[in-house]
Length: 357
Image 1 (cartoon, rainbow, N blue to C red):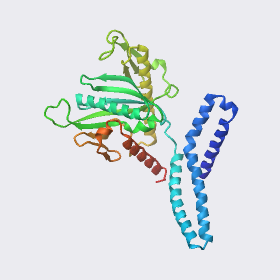
Image 2 (image 1 turned 90 degrees about the vertical axis):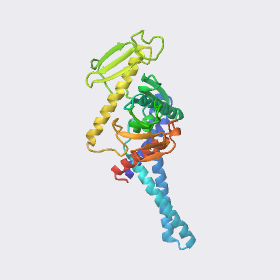
Image 3 (image 1 turned 60 degrees about the vertical axis):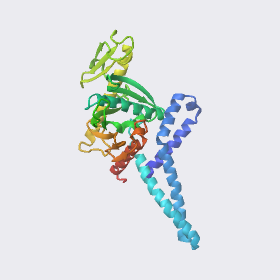
Image 4 (image 1 turned 30 degrees about the vertical axis):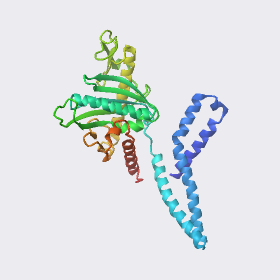
């Protein structure tokens, strides 16, 4: 491991030297490429350099214990040895994790699809609630939200809503949100005050670039039709809505939110590329570990991941057995505690697989 870490540290210094040359400094594109490459390994290099410094201090403490007879000096050295040994153990685990291959999608923008499941109108209302929750979370993270497609219900909910979240490391924070979200509460339409259970499915897809998903023009079928539902003056008057079908897979995407057929087509293709990339990634993961089920979860839409119980003011994530009794603030976008717990569980699992834990 040390040889690999030394090589990464040398690469970090080489990149620093490159970035300081007049040629690279004068070329913004090249400079950004070198800066990104350096940033990708910065945490690993800084941790390794801290490790080597503490390793030297540990050797000095051990030398004092071998050579000194003064009781006070020996006590100080013994305490430092204990502290440094514990710190080095933690740093070594951290270095092993940082050496693990990163998820190449972590830094990507993300397309989130939320759909009503069982529960009728109540499920549609909860789709709107989840969209608002993620929008508030994105706002706190200084991310941008763009609605790609939506299908509204009469009571202010959605049969489905698809939106793009853009910003720094979006997918790394949202990727474990995929699955079935169950809600338990008294619906607005319930006159008897009975608690109903409804379900909503969430899919989280990394945005795909054209180079990642190559779609031949003859693989696509486009249909245009008139938009329906809430909208501006052009709704129901022009053929602006677009349906795109990917013939090899049968995947279908429709977009009608924009008045422009061109914009709806662009959004539909963006969603289609993301779905095709997600399908390819899932197939590759399945081939690598056909019988393995992740502790955190696969993001499969059929997997119940979380329950929102309004009468008890409780939200429970079933994958990490974490329950918070502050559902009201959670629905306002304060979801980071559960996001962090899911990321930590994934880290622990990956380290265990690598033989670290």
